[in-house]
Length: 243
Image (cartoon, rainbow, N blue to C red; front, side):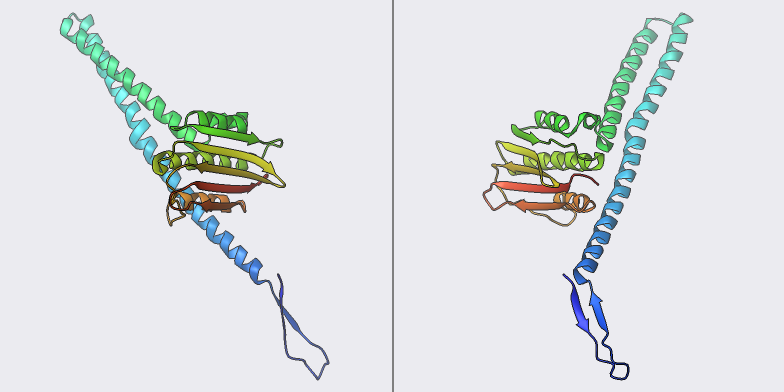
């Protein structure tokens, strides 16, 4: 809506001047700036967390693996020099520990990569959500109707929204069943997660839903939460098809 504010007439020159104020547009610009600022801060925090996870987790595991394999190598050298059976048993322990550490490091690296970009998204959002629903801790009914594939950025946002919402259902709702629906509506992708849990979900500062709202807001999407006490809870995400 455009608001017109007419100024006083200038009788000497015989004209009116009009001031046009685009108030809602300016407010929307401020909201987008604030939303993007929060997302930038969140992205920076996520990058710092990834760095810490790599340093304290996978990197530390690989360092430990290298040290254990180094000790095992020395022990093997001792065996070659005929130092005895005890060293052989210790070598086996070191190699077994190194093997476990290597597998744990691989798992951590896989989880980190999955948190940045799930490889299953390369096959499309429908397949990615099918995999996500199958791995859920509670039964999930999946409804997918996507005749047109969204852009990569929208697919990523939709996937992480679905993952976060299903995780919330499993952790907090006490639900026995959930429904994940992703459909194409005119000009939009609509994602909806509903459950038969206890209700009471709401958007709180620094909460998981607030983080989702900020991420959705960066592409001019919308988050709606309906969760009366006693349930059911229905969370709806609307995203543009392309960003």
